Figure 1 (tube, helix red, strand yellow):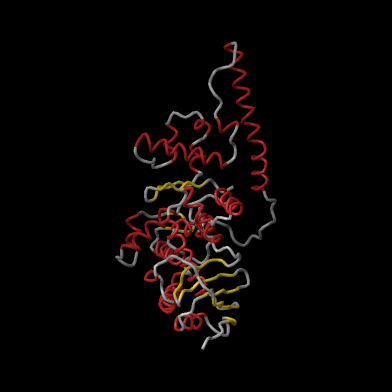
Figure 2 (tube, rainbow, N blue to C red; figure 1 turned 30 degrees about the horizontal axis):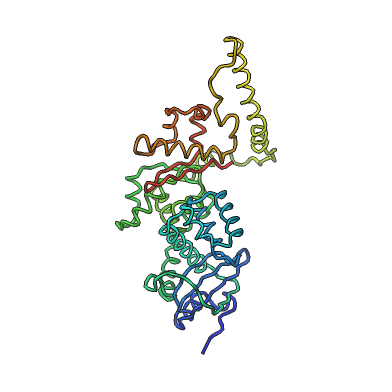
Length: 376
């Protein structure tokens, strides 16, 4: 006897939904529609195959977005691949493997992370309409690697209990943390000797730089919302990290009402974005003409490429990435900091100040370079 699975989570909790799917070994797609978004989980005989946002019929699209959030692809690369996918009618996953941008193992890991995040999301939902549609689910995952709905339910309930304990320590994904302790203190802060937990703590601490918010750290850590948030909470409780603007808030005077002020920073950014390129070109023009008058002709040195042709951060990022590969080819390792590139023989790097290089997020993790342009 088949049971119709549709209703509202206020009347029929997600735990009961998972129990029915697991007990009856159902195959199909569960969609949960919330106020702001919808998510799906695909099941094969009661076992979870994959999951993600349900805003599109093409289930490969959420995978592309997750690849960008995790730092494997740039937004421009994903846009180009999606255009090619529409033109050639080839799945995004096939194009990723064909171009060599992503290896098959990495693609599987990201899909697993996306599914794990979706399960964590759906377990926390207390309201929203749900509907289960019985249909065939195509996949190439071995059956022994699929988790049953009942096992996921048990793990999910345990995770929710632990989540309540540290979610208050990291109450918002918009918070920005900075380091105030070292790696030894971070290891001591981990409340277990499990190697995986220690690895998560160290990975999260490496990403704390006083600029990225919690959500960005979660995405780049590639360990999931639950594990990354728990690591941040333990680090904060141990005094290894603190909220980046905590000191400025403590020094703010109280009792005086705030006045509405003009948006100075946006105005300054707009002015700088308009005048800076013109100013740089003016400096080069004056310098070049001055040297021409002194020597009777124009000097033969080339104007740095970035100063003239590549003011866009996209080109600048690609140039820095190329120089990192040159550095690795010449030295056998990647530099500890981008500022080390300044000592290389490259004309265009002369137009990049150490402070500009410091604006980039740069880290080498598992012999892989993560380079992110400054967020304007």
